Structure formats: C-alpha cells, structure tokens
Image (cartoon, rainbow, N blue to C red; front, side, top):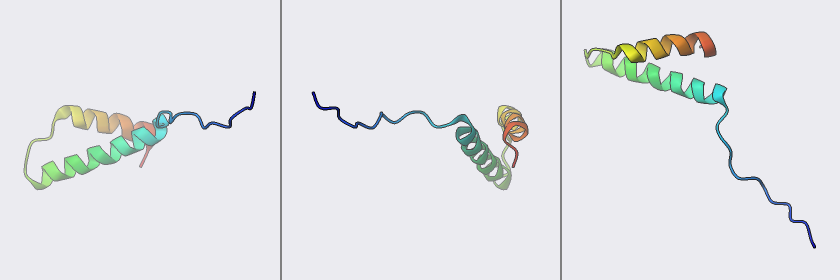
Length: 57
C-alpha cells in the first residue's frame, strides 16, 4: 500500500489574526458612523475596547 502525502484540510484562522481583523473592521465601521453623524452602537465600543486591550494597535 502506497502512502499519499495529502495536505490536511484548511483549518481555522488563528485567534490573534481573527481579533486583529475584527478590530480593524470595528475601527472602520466606527469611523464611517462618525463621518455620517450617526450614533455608534455601544456594543461596538465595548468590543473595540476589549480588543484594543487584547490585541493592541
């Protein structure tokens, strides 16, 4: 029986990368809302503050 060198299936994005991408998305959304003079969802601000402590800038 011949062994095949198969690559494993695609896994999950590492949390640090996911969190960094989420932080950038939140920043962009908050800026868009500020520029449009719209209220910012408090949950966005809370999540942003949590991620900025965790990931940094």
